[in-house]
Amino acid sequence: MTEKEQDQDLMSLIGEADCRFTNLEVTTHHYEGYPSAMSGGTWAIAPPTVLSDLKYYQFNCVTWANNHTLDYLYGGLEATERYLDEAGFVHAGVGKHLDAAAAPKYLESPAGRIAIIGATSTFHEFWRAGKQRGDSLGRPGVNPLRYQTTFYLNQKNMEHLQQVAAVTGINAEHELAVKEGFALAGAQYKFGDYSFELSEEEGMKRHLHEGDVKRIRAAIANAKRQADYVLMSIHTHEMGEGRKDVAPDFLEDFARLCIDEGAHAVIGHGPHIVRGIEIYKNRPIFYSLGNFIFQNDTVATLPHDFYEQYGIEGEATVADALDIRSANGTRGLGVNKKVWESVVPLWEMEDGKLTSLRLHPIELGFGLPRYERGWPKLSANLDVLYDLQRLSEPYGTKITIKDGVGHVSL
Image (tube, rainbow, N blue to C red; front, side, top):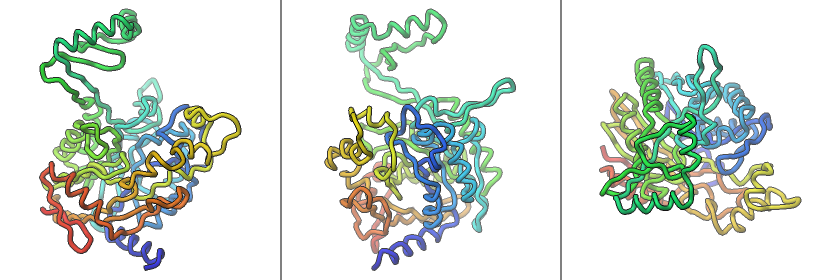
């Protein structure tokens, strides 16, 4: 089969669906924004013509709330929004202020009206969209899903921690801020930026931010009265059990409450590899679908901050910087085979319940030079389906493989 025929097969597969969604994890513009002092890892930028590639693959809606949304600050955000509008995409998760970023967006399709809501838990703090007030403008940015991490220690270990704090003075600035009214004293013990509580059961727990949850639940409640189906998209790099392929605790809590509120599916992405699938109340939760198009090593330029981060001096080029980051192709995402294989899921619903879910494996060119890899094609390699079988088992999800396709048992 030629590459063109493979493309046609993949396009036809995606084209079977009425709603064809993907996460847009790149700013698309002609350098209409200044590079931020910090990025999502790579300062992600591509010309707006990449939106034609998404159209080529039949996608009709995106969310773009993620850890790259403000790589080029507000100019890049505003330009990306403009080019998405011009390309005719329904897009969600980002806006000129918080209410706009959180608002459902609607896709009219033969299957009915579909609402799309986007949020991200992985972002730099100043990327959060700000709420409008009667006396103050809001702030452009992403629809955030924040969480608070609490670490639990027994009495003995807590005393050790307090001794370390006393010797190092790590809490001095926080204690001064509390005295001067710039911070609040809480019930938890602060150690630098971290919060601790006494407990005989030691470990870590992440708790969802109540305000963010309230806002997202309200958006779902609104959308389910305005559309036939509601899709919730969530971008999350955080891990569970110290593993990229395991969803963090707060993401599981969040996904289920979205379904409880009325979402018909929760679509996760972020770690660049697949995570397990849960069928909750007859509706799918994809904790991560991995990559579809992934070309983070083909940026044309990088700001000085990138070179400085890796200690690169002099008249270095982008190729020099990428060689150093990857240790000449021996480390990083480029050498992780799981980054370069994923699935295209197709599912059907009736009366709000899942009736079928198929998983079609794809590959993105693992082992090719970095400037060639990243384009998807249907794959006969079933490794990603075996991974999904294993990762979905803790959720009680059974996946059978037949004729090279994964079928979720319902």
